[in-house]
Length: 346
Image 1 (cartoon, rainbow, N blue to C red):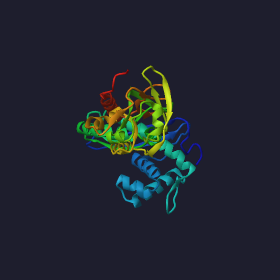
Image 2: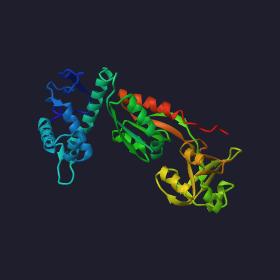
Image 3: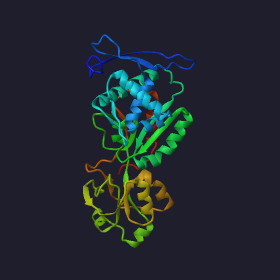
Image 4: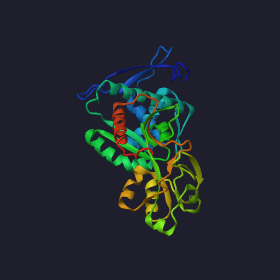
């Protein structure tokens, strides 16, 4: 393809015409015209773009077809027709997995941008404003997900039954934003400049252990005593724990991990069974504290970050226009997370 025939890196001209039907207008076809070109690229349907993006993301035509509820043979024909229209090989097929060509990688980026703008236009025109519909991809820490998402999704789905969710629990949910997710819920640090972050509020961590463990081992009186204790560690926190004493001095203590696991619900269960001391957010330890399964350790010391601050809850978005349904979810999550009870600052 020549530069005039393919999708350039410069600005594109997108013009659309609404589809016909009794339901709300659906702009299902568009013309793409490269800047400086006097001819339009052959019309390509939005559905084909969605198919191409889904196939590329899943890594197989069968997987993409399954997600879109069409047959693999139909998906294969549509991809072949797309390549014929563009006069370019987009995918290299093999028995195990397909691989994008250089042209395919370029077209994938363009397709994702086009679909994002298309959804934004439809959304802003108001076709979904009264009854938002569609898919929201949410990434979240496992502890935030287990603590907040059941209630959030229940209430949000009751209010907007036309919205569906894909939820992924990850140690680094903000990284999934780069993979097409719409919003991430996570604790600090603040997102980098390529993402948009909304700071919700700080929260507190604390040390906890079961009564059985504290009967078996002498309770620590200072952070230095932790060197002689069994500690249950989340890899995101690591082995260097920082504390602020009643006078405001910051100290660092290196601990040994009896068990290291990337799940706070599992760490809380292990702590309740007497396996050691856990450093955990108060908002997560609350039920175990109320039931007596866990008790606070070193209550005169604050668990802080290296700089003496408290960790913070963030909502992070990709740096692109947000659909109405994503904005609605963001506002709801922000209001819900701000209701978390935090202990007063000493």
